[in-house]
Each structure stands twice: as C-alpha cells, then as structure tokens.
Image 1 (cartoon, rainbow, N blue to C red):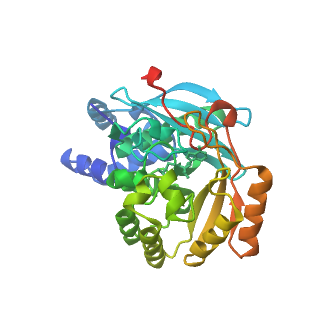
Image 2: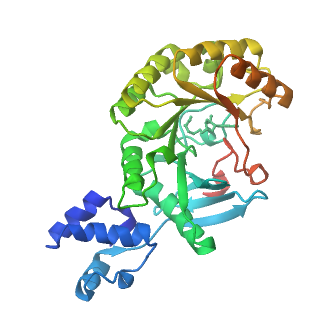
Image 3: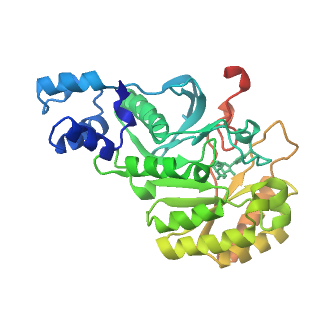
Length: 345
Ligand code: SAH
C-alpha cells in the first residue's frame, strides 16, 4: 500500500497505464485530491465503482501526523510533523493579509552549522523525500480546510535543512505543488532559501522556473561570513555573487538577500556600505531580519535604532530593502528557532 500523496502526476499516470486505464485518470484523481480536498476514493464520483475498489487496494491517504500543535498569539501555528519512519521535523504556518504561507523543513537536522541558527545544532540525519515535503503542506492544507475552508497560498523552504543540499527532491516537490493539476501554488508564491551552495545556484538558473530564490547572506565580507557560516569557507562571497548574476541572467528574477541583524557583528554602517556594493552588482532586494535569540550562542539582536539606521542607509543608496515582520516568537516558531529537541525523538 502506497500513500497516494507520495506520487507525482507522472508517477500516477504511469501507474494508470500499468493498470490499463486511460492516463487521464491520473489527472482526475489529482484534481479530486488537490483541488477538491477529497480524501477517499468513494467520493470520486467520475470514477467507476469497480475501479475505485481497485484503487483502494493500491493506495491509501496517509499523511505525516501533526503533533504538538502550538498556536501563537499572532495566529502563527507551529507543529511537529511525524514522518512515516518516526523522524520528526518542524513546520510553521503564518497568516498574512495575502494568504496562508507554510514554512517547511527540507531535511531532518542540518549540516551547515550556521552559528546563529538553532536548526543546525542537530546534524543532518537524512534528506526529506519530495512527498515528505508535500506531506507538510498537505497536513496544513487539511488543517486549514477543516478550520475555515481556506488553503495554503504560499510555500517557503526556510525551515530546517538546506534545500540545495537536497536539490533533486526539492525540485520535484516544487514542481508537484506548482502543477496546474495539483495544488497549483504559483511559482512566484514559492521561495527557496539557500546558504549559497554555488553549483546548485547555477543549476537552479538553468531550470528557468519563476520560483523566488533567497540567499542567506548575513555578512558583507568573508571575514564576518566565515565566522557565522562555515559553508562560506567552501563557497565564499566572490564565488556566490557570480553564481547569483548567472542565475539572474538565466531566470530574469530578482534575488532576495537575507541579512540577520546581529549586534556588533554585522550591523555597522561600514557593513551597510559593503552590502550596498554587493547589491549593486546584482538585481537584489535585502530582507533585514531581526535576530532571534538562540540560547546556545552568545550573539544578540541589534538595537531597533541600529536596524533602522542600517535600513535607511540601504534605502538612501537605492537598495530596496524591508525589515522582516516577526511571527510566532512566543512559541519559538520564529526564523532560526526551529529545532526538534532531542528529548522529543
Ligand atoms: N538553509 C537555508 C534555509 C534555512 S535558514 C538557508 O540557509 O537559507 C532560513 C532562514 O532563517 C535563513 O535566512 C536563516 O538565516 C534564518 N535564520 C536562521 N537562524 C536565525 C535566527 N536565529 N534569527 C533570525 N533568522 C534566522
């Protein structure tokens, strides 16, 4: 028995052909599941009864389980998702004026070891399969449907893990949620965030997708970035920037630079000046992120005054920039706070 959610449209189509059915059946089934939120073959009224019985023998509707659901004062919801092999990852649902966005994890643990991030405290155990990423979206989609008949409109790959460390599965997942027969989440409503795995940035450009790319830059020079992000020793800024330029030539897209504001580390106006010169080489947009405290390190959040000064400096130098709105900080659901504690495993 396979979970029906684990099949891409192509895989389901091949199964239909193997079962001597019209390949179009796959699109019908997909449409019931993803457009009409149906989770039983009995409700698929345009499929013959005998074939529905046949389908039941092959597939079920199992999804990873949502556990420990926590709701923040601002409505943000964080939960643990129990995968079929028992591993746990965290996902977060945020409610914006423009819709519901889910932040999903792409790996169990993370190997990148960024100093400011709680997720990297547990080494990567394994990469998630495409259907395990889909499972996180579908679990929340079901939750929302039951709650107020709404649905997920945006997906960000910014939870635990490095998406480009799990490139093939991430791409397959993105194509599935973007499919017009599936959830049909617009490419521009999907954001992949990477710490800068250079060869994969080049590869991603060649995909010619309209998916948003965000780069976790967090420092305007190698000296500071090496201290914060060990991956910078492998792929330093002077290699990342040409990769970003190449990606932009291929895709025509603006890239978001994520920049966590850490007190006395990367928040000086000198840093802002260096950041401006990086941004001027690319078509970019800077998202300044208030640092969320992680107890295991001694970093602290920049003062609001300094964040505003930094922001103003960017704007005055014609760099588009915003300060990220914070969600769910009272339930440890904010950026960089996702972790599955060892005692929960
Ligand atoms: N590996 C990917 C995706 C996971 S990190 C990447 O590096 O982009 C997702 C975002 O959360 C990144 O911008 C990351 O830098 C940010 N983040 C991590 N720890 C944080 C913290 N303590 N405070 C604020 N943002 C944090």
